[in-house]
Length: 245
Ligand code: SF4
Ligand code: SF4
Ligand code: SF4
Image 1 (cartoon, rainbow, N blue to C red):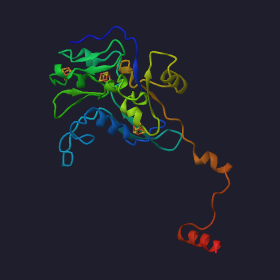
Image 2 (image 1 turned 90 degrees about the horizontal axis):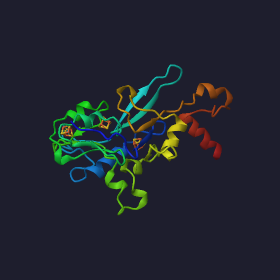
Image 3 (image 1 turned 90 degrees about the vertical axis):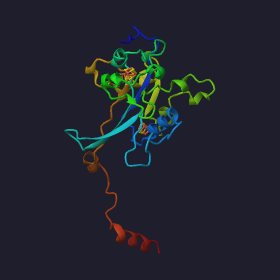
Image 4 (image 1 turned 180 degrees about the horizontal axis):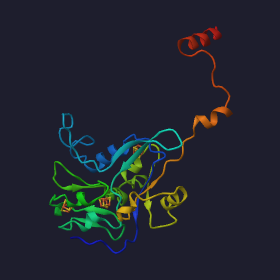
């Protein structure tokens, strides 16, 4: 079994805003493209155009309809990837030392050369964040794009995870959550960022920001003037067109 570092100098991770994520999957495609683009990217790894495509996607987005007790139903888009847990059971369960957590920045990685594909780490992860590559037969997971964030050959603006660089709504944030003054830590403090499934005791580094309450027309409608009381549809169009003649 593999040991975890007692502490890490930094805690690099993601802060994901469930309020502004629109479920576009751009982060899924960017992740796939950057991390496994040697074959099939950003499509599935095998049978991409067939009846049963399969592939390891290190970042996935799930969408749920949530029904609050006192408001209209709303859709919540929920991106999910490895949360780089401080107390990562995927590391301690690994029989070969292939899974490890870095003491310098807290990133949890897999050394694919030492992975025997036993699948124990995927079983141990309570978030379903690990996927076995169906072609290479080794375990894969989010690396926080460790080959981008320290890469001096990239322009400075590209030295962040591909998903963060790509997100069109700015819902994904990357930084050091061990530094209380970092932008991500301040965001978590201001918006009530939370751990995913804290009862699992994994101490995830990544944080989620909750969706804000939606405005309801029931509240605002009495305060607003009527928008349009004229005829609608084809008759409305005809009415407006004739008015302009
Ligand atoms: S999210 Fe899962 S794979 Fe990632 S560090 Fe935590 S337990 Fe391991
Ligand atoms: S699948 Fe690989 S990384 Fe996961 S526990 Fe087995 S040897 Fe370790
Ligand atoms: S790219 Fe951004 S908005 Fe689109 S699914 Fe991913 S996190 Fe959500």
